[in-house]
Length: 51
Image (cartoon, rainbow, N blue to C red; front, side, top):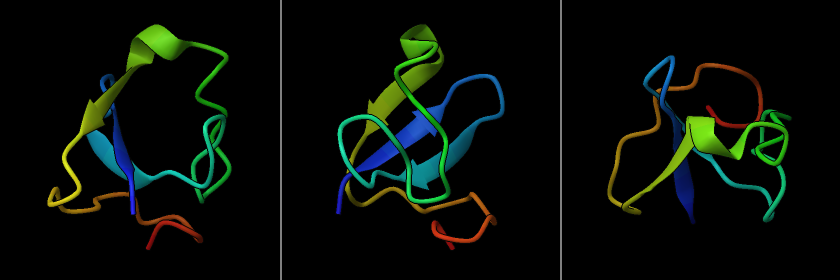
């Protein structure tokens, strides 16, 4: 399961596909705000879908 971090909030999300996280964030709107992290990173997003 691929994971991605939102740089501004420092939250780690689970990727649903190449455009969105499982909680519904669109990562293509501001791609500079997102950073790929390793699959071993702990998910810190507490929204439905990621947690």
